[in-house]
Amino acid sequence: MSKDLINQAVITLKQGGLVAFPTETVYGLGADAKNEAAIARIFAAKGRPSNHPLIVHIPDLSALSDWAVDISPDAMMLAKAFWPGPLTLILKKAPAVLSAITGGQATVGLRVPKHPVANALLQAFGGGIAAPSANQFTHISPTMAEAVREELGNKVDMILDGGLCEVGLESTIVDMTGDVPVILRPGMISVNDIEKVLKKTVLLKSSQTTIVAPGMHHLHYSPHTMTRLVNPSSGITLTQDDLPAAMLTYSKIQLPNIQSVEIADDPSQYAHDLYRLLRQMDHANLKTILIEAVPEIPSWDAIRDRIGKAAGSV
Ligand code: TXA
Ligand code: MG
Image 1 (cartoon, rainbow, N blue to C red):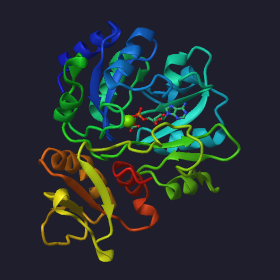
Image 2: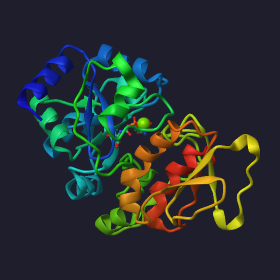
Image 3: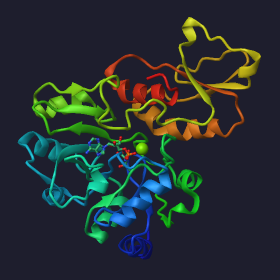
Image 4: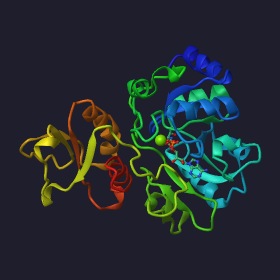
């Protein structure tokens, strides 16, 4: 990425504009986290309700205390272990953090991303960049620049193209404000990875309980096409009205009348490709998108969460 583009993006942010930028997880729709009007533009561009809090992206660990207070030793340990990287910490907010960012809550989500373009932008900007995923509310997060353009059109002032996102799924969110760490959104940094660092048990919030992270919503991360989660071994019932149909399959099953879209059987590679392939299927004039259910083991937790939500079945 050229220095000129980064400088232009910094100027855009300073003027209250919106800049979409790549992170290792998904593309973010960025605004100056200290500019209330710019933050309002994020919500308008996404069609997102204003009580859904935004994650503030910061350049490095040293900026943490500008945004959060009462940071526990455990929270510090996680930041040191996983930043830069796909982990968001929910911490008690510093007094100056705008309530437009936190949805009026007393906490703030913070993360140091790991993508050379995001890092260059944050360093050059020298402050916090508020950024949700750069998609329309409830739709699939973008993992490439073309997908941002498709989602936001000219509601975004500038898009920094950093190619395909490496991780492909949104960050793991851990609430560190209580007695026990709670995973609000599973991600590719797993419960097990976090427990190993903290040497204690953490909780995984079930999507049934009261919503704190509104990402834990029915029909979040959804294609426009009717999407169903299926278990091919227990049979799939389709009527003529459901056709044409295609199935995203990691076990590479072929079924009559259903086009197979193959995806890796390894969770990291699967996560990397999931949103790109769902988007492709969403453009294929299908009546039905089928997603083969994935293994019920922890390494698939984040993927199970997202495909369940894409199918509206969580
Ligand atoms: O990987 C990611 O996290 C991407 C990239 C761009 O960093 N960002 C992302 O942001 O997924 P967004 O806004 O699409 O999802 C963030 C989730 C939302 O469900 C939001 O409700 C939750 O984080 N969140 C943010 N601040 C929070 C807070 N203070 N307490 C609880 N949940 C919070
Ligand atoms: Mg999102």
